[in-house]
Amino acid sequence: MPIKIPENSTLPIGFTPDFLETICNLIHYFVLRQQLVVLAMVQHNPGVLSYTVDLDLTPYRHAQRERFLKRKQAIEEQKPRVYRPLPVWKHDWQCFAHGHGCRLTHLRTGERIEWDASDQSAFTIYWFLNHLEWRLKNELDDPYVYRCAEWLNANSADIEVVEKAINCLIELEILNVGGSHVCRFNPEDPELPTDPLTDDVVGAFFNSLLHYHERQQIAIDAMVELRPDFIVQFAEDPYTMPDTATRLKSLYQHLDSLPKSGSRIQTGTWRDGWKYDIRYGTCTLKHKETDESIRWSNSDPLYVDEHGYKQHLIWRFDTEPEHKDLRTMYQWAEQHTNGTSDAFTGLINLIYQLISAKKIKFSRNKKGLSIKWESPHSTS
Image (tube, rainbow, N blue to C red; front, side, top):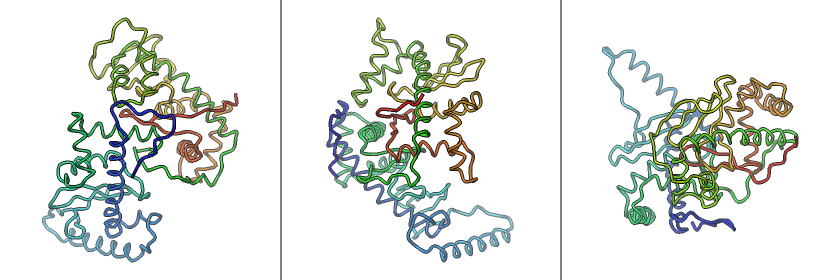
């Protein structure tokens, strides 16, 4: 699948279009391979597939219940009880159900495929990487696997660089990413939300986002002062997007000499009573008196740390419940939970509504997700 790099985009110096195209084709292959998990779940866990497959699952649910009752009776009659192995599908695949999905493991080859309902065109990044590692050891006769292995060997790279290639594809908007690191290819004609967001809700959200963006600068300042080596490491990585690298480099250009690396985990107290927890390139601050929490995941300083923003929003709802923007967002959330979940879950849904409406986008690095936007409109 030839990839279409957006105009005015520059690739990191470590990647070539050919390698990114190879990764895209490997992802497409994995998405097709996931259909085996879907078929296995039709037999072993049909209850979670109601909105996923165009198939009447009622007979499969009845059959599953019959098998369950027979197993339960057999277990109760066993004295002493013995360990019962995981079920096997089609005589070849061991099935391990988890959440709304399943993990298949081939009994002979050891191939492992995992998928979670409900989008058959989506994939989880880490499960894809696990599968690709297996293919790199066992399927070098596949032309795309061979190309990937050849490139990794030539560049002394490993599977971690493939993850960085996925992050690059997300930044180029060839892939989009959501919670739990689930990705899908961007559709040419995306479906817009059926319930359009009102201007006051969008404005309130952007105001809260910009508020956190300003507060996030404190965590950035702490990282620059306490552990700039983490920023240098990311900025100098040949697989970091050029614009992001430039913005990161500007954070430490005032230093007389490049900092030395320290321990990966560091805690203590910094300026004005901020407790800090810096680990693996992520800085989390918590104020001793107010309990305000601010997080920055060593990503582009122009973006907002997604996890930090949500945690800060929880704190603001507790400390500023009458704030106009917060009330607007909270009221929207209450109206869209339908009594099935808490209002904060509705606020998380608001983020995904805004992504669907192309108001905001997710970026990603190894430390987590970031929220990016083009030109937010403040209503303050």
